[in-house]
Structures are given as C-alpha cells and as structure tokens.
Image 1 (tube, rainbow, N blue to C red):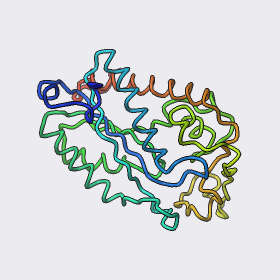
Image 2 (image 1 turned 60 degrees about the vertical axis):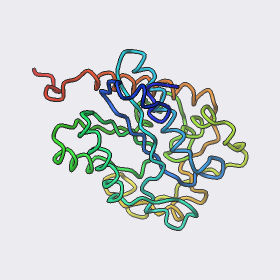
Image 3 (image 1 turned 30 degrees about the horizontal axis):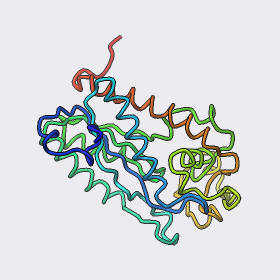
Length: 255
C-alpha cells in the first residue's frame, strides 16, 4: 500500500491521516495514432501523479492522489470512434462536487494534474475560487513541467515522439512497433492567424490528421521517456512540496 494513493488506502489509516494537498489527475480516452492505446492520457496521469506524490511524501509533504478522471473534452473528435467526450460544463460539475468535499473536510489545497490538451481548467478554477474562497486551487499540465526540447527533436502534441517515449517507458506492453505508427502529419489551417498562433479554433481531428497523431513518433525511445518522466516528476514534486508548505493567505513574496 502506498499511503499517498487514496485508492490503495484504507479507513484505518485515512481517518487519522493529515492531508495538506489533494492531487486530482485528469486524463482522456481517445485515439493516439495507430500505435498507442486509448488510455494513454490516463496511464500517464496516474504514473506522473503517483511518482511526484511519492517524491513529495518522502520529503515530508502530506499529499494524497485521488483516483484519475478518465474522460476529457473531446468535442473536436465527435466522429472518431469511441473518443469519449465530457463537455466543459460536465467537467465543472464534477470538479465542483470534489472541491465541495475537500472544502467541507478541511483539505484546502487541490492540484488538478492535467494530462490532456483539450482540457482547460483555468476558467473552472476561477469560478470555483469565488464559490470556495478558502480553497487554494491550482492546475498544471504535466507535459509542460519540463523542457521538451532538452529531450526530444520532433515537435508535436499528440502521440508524438514525447508521448510515445513516455509510454514506451511506462507501458511498453501496450505500445505497438513504431513501424506500425502513422507519421502524425498535421494539416495546417488555411487561416493565417491560426497558423501563426494568434487566433484559435478547435481542431477537427478527422481533418487535421490522417492517423489521429500530431507529431512524428519515429525517433521515440524508452530511454528518452524515462529521462523526461524523471525530470517532469521531480519538478511537480517540488511544486507539491511548496504547495504543502505555503500559507494560502500569504502566497506572494513582497519586494
């Protein structure tokens, strides 16, 4: 039993256990090119949360990882078979209920650990912060917690070199040979503002990619995945330690 993983814990230990920070991993269930499983974002969220929590716990921080939410926002993938969508309003309702429980029980720090690019928790945390002023609500995208360019050469953001390397490290049993993967070529928008990054429209997945990937996974290796995983979880563990120690009413440095 890992004492920082709620799903593995029991009431005998939990009833007297101090919890300073709750971590909510949030993933998605969706196609990841031809070679990665639909649960990629879930496996990544669980593993990153658990390892970061382990490091923080062993450093003395009282943290607990809640069970991962396996569905995310997939509104742009309505025609991709079994890509399961939660609307943002549904996510907000789920998150509100969880925050309400934590607030009532005196656990006033929550990190939403996001594992899916389609999820955007910032507006939700703004709204919930007003409703629950005693809560210190944070979110981070685990895949941005370390500098990708220091580990990977090929750009991308879905079933790419980075994500494939991570899964080769975490769950090699679920990764097909790279010879079976698509190239992850992204079809660029006809609108200049979107191509240049100063305008935005949701990507329609069946038009933007032929294989549901964005980024070529060909150069992925388990060693790259291990190195990036370790760098990422170290940084998130540091965030958890600082979050556990900080006074929410005195969270900014002066001067």
